[in-house]
Length: 450
Image 1: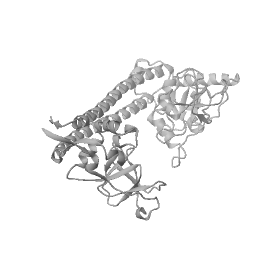
Image 2 (image 1 turned 135 degrees about the vertical axis):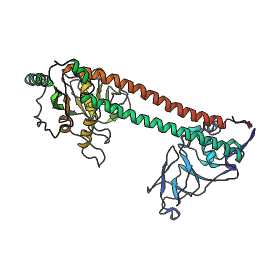
Image 3 (image 1 turned 60 degrees about the horizontal axis):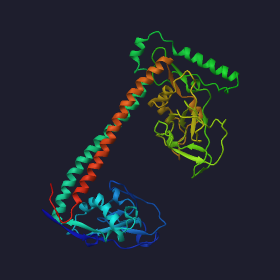
Image 4 (image 1 turned 135 degrees about the horizontal axis):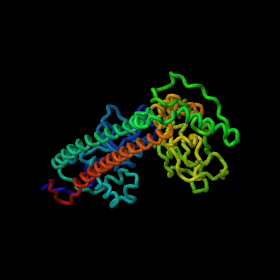
């Protein structure tokens, strides 16, 4: 049994006093804390500030007033003094009364959040300043008990870190597995058995002839515009060897018209009749209808900007990791227009849009888009219509396309199940740590540690 006493935080924690103008000579030449992440790591930079600053010395406990309960706090151990904006606070502490490592864990516990709700007007939504923190009354055991509890925390935290590391490793492996599935799909490896069982299907060259004939007739009927001739495909361009009966082609051969950029008028912060997509609508590779903005402008129902079922939207501008990412739209007509940083592709009727999407999201095609993006060293890398139109796509007969889609969807569904399980495990790990924190500090007068 150990006795816990009610004390004020200000009995053992002391604010480092001093406020300095940004140009004060006392802080000239000192770096400033840019942020403290949720793992308690300090990020220091030479950033100017227009607000008043505080001084931080080695050994100080530094707390982010905005994100303290999420873990944005830590003891600064740098060799040189640093500064921080007044959104942070810095403290020394009485080591005879408190273990700062023990107290840090208390500040991340549900009990601390509950105390803020009870004792601070506005609760956790308030930016926590010394005037809020120091008067708080908490239950605190003696120093020996703190160190014992801390040792138990550290053991559990080590196990938790190992678990999270393993879950992160599993996520990375799962991502590689998804990529491998798509790559093997477009290389024909997933359907090698299918081809062995169906040796007499027509070659893809016949499908290409029918597609060309269909598009020529549509141009003649003035239903689509003629596309610019594309350069022939050289052997040096081909990233891998195709199965017998498959053909390499340019993307422009498989869509009705060359890709077109969207339109990005000024958006408004209230609902209107016209929704335009954010880049987040396609960043995951799956269409997300919740990622929209509104524009206060009428768009003709005949405009090419409205997306329709089977349309593939491809990002032409984003970070280098996401440029070229695509998603299929399968919703109703005339619900969304698309922005300037996307292009729209309409696959021909004899091509599975899902198969084409798998090809565009495969590692070899994603690498093509990344390597052909311009401005990668500037603000935003981009790909243009010529790059997208010229992308190489491996083509097989319609029957094998469907066989590939079926196989890929089955395998990706299994990946989704695995990802859900990993996510649940991560959630459970976090819930377990919160439960440990809550249990450790849920004491009134006496505690018996199990």
